[in-house]
Length: 279
Image (tube, rainbow, N blue to C red; front, side, top):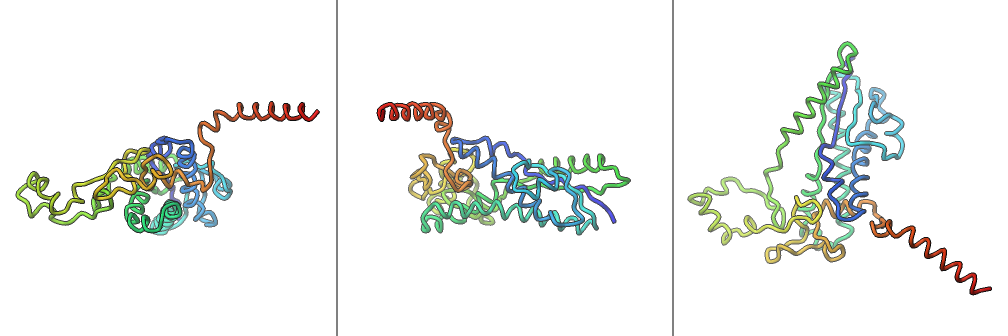
């Protein structure tokens, strides 16, 4: 029975983690990526034909964040069987990502969630990409197999194209076939389309954190409007909003951390003062 080396990765995670305006953005992104990787790897944890290399089986089975955005493992079986297992792993990872939709849903009014649900789901689903490759280990030469999967993953990352079926305006807009056929040329389209179908032209501000996705809450008449600004002072896309609250509990701010020692010192002095007054 053949053995295959598998590489699976979430590429370009720097933007996901580093693009932050608050400490909870940074910690949310730092925890989210390992959790997504973990959910996929755990789906194969009890498969006797799977051997984890990076991370190790012990790390996969425990509730640990010691998982990077890249994993290597071997799977024994026919090529088609191996591919199906890797696809299943990828599906589990996307399921974990999509739990962020519930994070947004629980923080905004039902009416607003219904209005922007398609945009919310689209932004979260397309916030990260998952790339994988397999290579048969022949003559126990795992080094060659690793080189093969590394090259294949690098090529796959370079060839990924964005979803061209939708446009992110003030809401999610599906592109229409032959969209320009009713006009003489593109300039004619730009001059007349706004009167006919304004959502094709009118967009929205981009997210204050990532600067890539449109803000959540813009309308036809107010492209600056933001649902998230009401309690955050930041206009955020669905993914960055969910990332900020991924922990589901309050995280200390940068100011809190910076003042921690000072506040502790003041608390000690205050308690000493109280004791001296009691005497």
